[in-house]
Image 1 (spheres, each protein chain N blue to C red):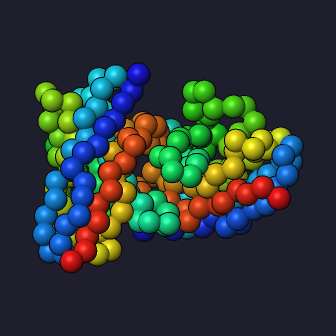
Image 2 (cartoon, chains in turn purple, brown; image 1 turned 90 degrees about the vertical axis):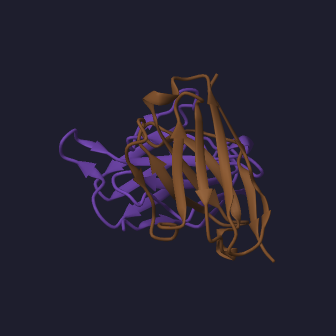
Length: 113
Length: 116
C-alpha cells in the first residue's frame, strides 16, 4: 500500500499569512504514460463533507480560490495557501489515487493563532 | 447541479448487515466510476470501495474485502454498499463520491454505528 505522510499535523496561523502543508508518498505518484501525478488535496470544514481543492497535484478545482496552489511531483507534494482567510480554517488531506487501495494522509488542521 | 444523497445508515449490532444507497443526480451517472469513503468519529478519511462506470469491476481495501460489496444500478442512478459482518471499527460516517481525478463530489454522508 502507498503510505501518505502529511506534515505538520496542525498549524496555527494569523489571517493574511502564507502557509505550506507537505505530503510525501511512499512511492512515486507520477504515471509515465501521461506524466500526471495522481495526487489530490481536500478541505474539510467542521460538520461538512470534504471538498476537492486540487487534483493532478496542481490543477485547481472549479470555483476554488487562486490562493490555493498545489505543487510537487513524484513523491513530494505541497499545498500552499497564500493570504489565509478565516474561512480557510479547516482540516486538509492529501490523497493518492495512483493505485488501490487509495490512501489519504492523516490530515493537517489549520487553526487561528 | 451534481447531487449525491446517501441513505440507509443507522444503529446495527455487531455481526449484522446494513445496505447503504446513494442516489445521484445532475450528471450522467454511467460515465463515472463511483466510490465510498468513510470517516470514523474524530478521525481521518478511509477509502472503502470503488466501482467502474459499467459496474464490471470493483475494488476494496483489505479492511473490508469479503465483507462489503459495492454495486450500482445505472438505470436508477443509484450506488449501493452492502455491508455484512459489521464490526465496531466500521462505525463511521460513510460518504458516496464521484471519481474524476480524485473524488470531485461528495454526498452529505450517512452515519453507521455498530454497537450492541
